[in-house]
Image 1: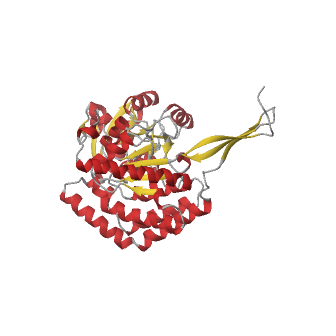
Image 2 (image 1 turned 30 degrees about the vertical axis):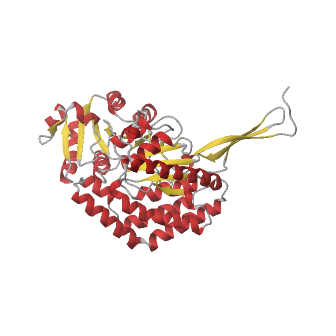
Length: 431
């Protein structure tokens, strides 16, 4: 018996009826969206961006309500940062939607084309996935990013934001629906679960396979694990962002310091924040003092192995658990390794397949790392905080996918399509 039925109440029966209605409406809207023109979808996106700007005050008031409740409830500083909106972040949402509208249309794109000896012309053509369920926590800007990317790629979407961002997300959602309406598109192409009740999530995961084609979770480890465990439809997502920066023996000292500081402290609460730094034993004494000084001055707690503690006296002894912990906070673990092979072995053992960076002047070492490390994103001489769809030129992202099936890395509009084969003939029959 599923978790959903174990907690079923009269209210959850109503939730079942409500969620079923959302699913049916989304399926009908998806069929219409797939036929909308590029210009029609782009007009909806531009109108939604305009609505976000014109209704900024309403969004900020809703966000303040959420912030007050979250602070009273003891939400962590990292989570409060994810939840908080200001004028700059609202403008970033609007600009992100506009940048998505300017991207090439992924729908209808001919991915491959060839002609058979019998004269058949075969094309592989990009098509929308259909109906996407997106479950996320805290960050209300995901409402705009996810809705915009689904609209751009011709998909209908059912959004389920976190309880703590309920008011903020609904204020943003209203702006997205306004964009659809202004462009003459079925407003049910973007829908939001209207309740905080967790039973709605259970129903979406277990009982909506008839209407929902894929689920994308975006949030903490517990949420994503629950989605992966309970979903009866395919899931695109990642469980954790245990990201690494490896300081090779050839690393430039200033680059090592600046990249590690940014990768850890620019925003500690995002999945692309570095959690473990690895450093070659040959250069640990030269590189670590400056790196750790910069981190400490920025308020970061340093946990290290015995060799690190021999170089950095104020470091706290790291435990085995530290190598598998996504801190999402001002804490970093540091380990001294023998060489690049040991660094890659550590990443393969403890990493989550998200994002890894090598700091090196030796191009051959860098290429070895980039080819051999099996993570969704690998970088050379750059911060892990670039693990972001906007930074990749995708306008925005729904999340970072660490699986190996379908999408991998930042999930933008293009990654929210599948394909079909279109075959054109002149009367051919198979012998």
